[in-house]
Image (cartoon, rainbow over all chains, first blue to last red; front, side, top):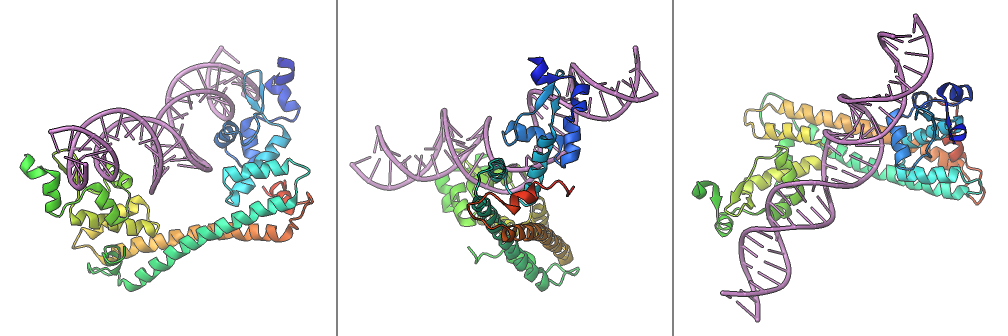
Length: 149
Length: 149
DNA sequence: CTTGACCTTCCCATCATGGTAAGGTCCAGA
DNA sequence: TCTGGACCTTACCATGATGGGAAGGTCAAG
């Protein structure tokens, strides 16, 4: 069993495998998060050395980079799981990926609009407030309004 | 002691006090969050009836509405704490409030820019992807790129 | 053989919010 | 007066993605 699933650390490195620290540096995903992704099933469990160290193949690091990139575009873990499945499915239809991406664009737009609404209101309040040493403050007055339920 | 700090439920209501459910409906803050704000010290501990029910004065409900409005503009709990302190300080300088509000505007703009960057990248990818039944997919190809560290 | 860098697991914290469970209270209607 | 249902109480757990730290094992260079 050990000969197939467990190797010595030095053997593993000679075979082009890396430990979690190197995988983290190479993928941009922290070691902490790599373990987390493994625990939640987002990425497969890697092999282990005889001492219990995780060992990652180049393809595993590639997967982590994929996750990193998708995270950078704001996809949730659940959506990234779907994207990974499509990535690993050679018979996928690109329309499926396209659909997920468009859903994500819509979600981003929703969040942007929400923040933009806040920003507009707040900018207006700041504009109305003199901002001097005196206590009169339209900003606080607005927050304290009773007439907008 | 009971005569000053504890009252019967019905007495409290006759005096214009409300229980947590009514305070929640009147302020828009859920009962759950009202208790949470109390626990974290954001809002003062209300009085209690003899049976241990929280009772809120109109001013307390007013404070909760203030919190609700500030939350709606994206302020964090910590910032709202500062705003409440300024609101309760009649000698405050409005410049202080203005400064907090401008900081919040800057933070909103930072978050908007971040999401906007994501959106732009993703829209470009979607544009490049035919989205048909075939597996070729520039979106996945981008996610899998090795050349952007 | 020591030292320091790295690995392992396990637990806790964030932030704002919601859920649930077990038990007590209030009030209106029969 | 009893009862049912709406409401309150506390206490604990969960979210999502991330980080921090402790306690202990492993590896490699000097």
